[in-house]
Amino acid sequence: MRNSLVCLSGFLSLEIQVFQVPEVHATPNSDAILPCTYSISGAEEVTVGSYKWYRHLVKKELEVSNSSKDFTGRISRLNTDQFINNRSAQITIHNVIPSDTATYYCEVTLVHGGEITGHGTGTLLNVTDVLELPSQNKTLYISILASVSGVIIVGLLMLGCYRISKQGDYCQHDKCCVQRTG
Ligand SMILES: *[C@@H]1O[C@H](CO)[C@@H](O)[C@H](O)[C@H]1NC(C)=O
Ligand SMILES: *[C@@H]1O[C@H](CO)[C@@H](O)[C@H](O)[C@H]1NC(C)=O
Ligand SMILES: *[C@@H]1O[C@H](CO)[C@@H](O)[C@H](O)[C@H]1NC(C)=O
Figure 1 (cartoon, helix red, strand yellow):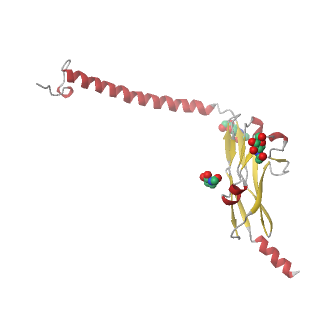
Figure 2: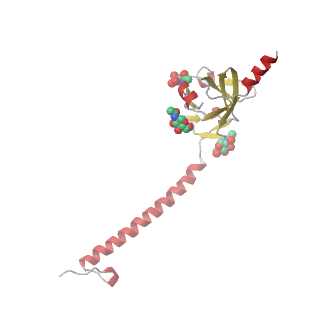
Figure 3: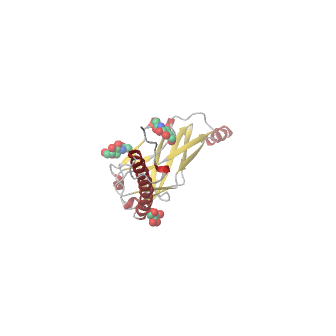
């Protein structure tokens, strides 16, 4: 009895922490990457495990995989090598639609003596046509365009002045003139 308790506490010393980003924005029909990484403590190396994603955590009602009806054929996962060696459990949801908007939970299970499972704090995937951001960007582009063309116009004017002064015509200010040869 005592032995098995000691053994059990040995299992429990392995701890997983799972990290997710709080929010991912995606526009409809794009591919949304949901990053997830984990760290372990209490074990040198764990080489067996797997990961799953759920939409909502409370009921675990929907596993996010190719075989669930809402996501058929739309899920890419990392291979085992990337999962074990790179400690990444990310998925990509392809061709997202507005109704994919939800909180997604990454769950990592590792086998080390016993099985131990940890999950992240959830990622809100927000699938929206971002209508307000482009207008902000447009303003930014316009101001960049304006300053760039301003620089170009000033440059052209200076070049023009230089050319004119080189020809020696229309030369009104000393500053604008270059020394005439011969
Ligand atoms: C899910 O299906 C898509 C399309 O058939 C495929 O490209 C992808 O590799 C599949 N994902 C998994 C985890 O099997
Ligand atoms: C491993 O993870 C890092 C950072 O998360 C990433 O930049 C790198 O591309 C990953 N390598 C592979 C082979 O997936
Ligand atoms: C999704 O993003 C849009 C635009 O940023 C925002 O208006 C909306 O409230 C977000 N939806 C959720 C569920 O957070």
